Amino acid sequence: MELIIYQVDAFTDQLFKGNPAAVVPLEEWLPDEQLQAIALENNLSETAFFRPNGRDYDLRWFTPAKEVKLCGHATLATAHILTKHLNQQNSAQLTFQTLSGPLMVRCNKKGWYIMNFPADHIYLTPPPRQIREALDVKPIETYKGREDLLVILANQDAVVALRPDFRRLEELEYRGIIVTAPGKDTDFASRCFYPNYGVNEDPVTGSAHTSLAPYWAGRLGKNELSALQCSPRSGYLRCRVLNERVEISGQAVTYLEGKIHI
Image 1 (cartoon, helix red, strand yellow):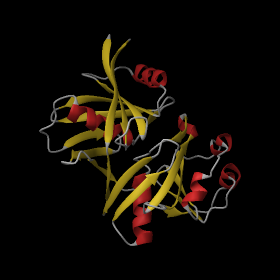
Image 2 (tube, helix red, strand yellow):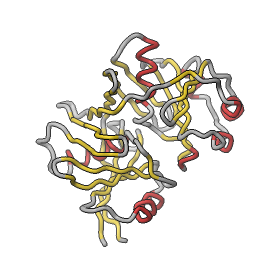
Image 3 (spheres, one colour):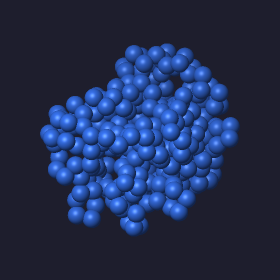
């Protein structure tokens, strides 16, 4: 069997920045074991698989280790491939049916993809002991979200300086650890760690901003926010909080188009 595969750098307009995602169009689902094997072989933080479903698309995401319920950068990458490579230029909005419900994406005239995701609800929680040991910092606050732990630090420099102990982070029963602080040139900055899903540090994490944007909107008293994920690759996002939904916007650039044989 021969499949088309694309690789896209998401949340950036420059190659080798942002977060790389693989995108594989399908007509029908392959067995889950095969989808997982392809994702492991790609060895990127996410591989997206999609298939047509009427006027919509079914969309799934796999890390090298397991399937996830929500992924932002691979959704953006999929919308980019549909728009730029698969003749969906005239579609005002793409709708993806996912494990997190319907996700909508539209592209504006400046080439930004605006994703509409469900907002997370976060709750103040005492910092786990492993957090202080794994990050070697004392958090100002910690919040428990849908799947992740949100860790608040004092400033962007403290976020950039982190050198996590990923083995200690794996002891925590969370999908991932999101560390954030006020930004220097943006409203807020962050880094995201997912060792339990086979991704020690995710370069730019759209789904994390379903937690980050509501937190910072409440703290800063504004619904439109700019964000920097300050991983070594880095990525820039725009967020808009809309009651129970969050718009997360970014750019994308295609790196690779090829074929895989299975």
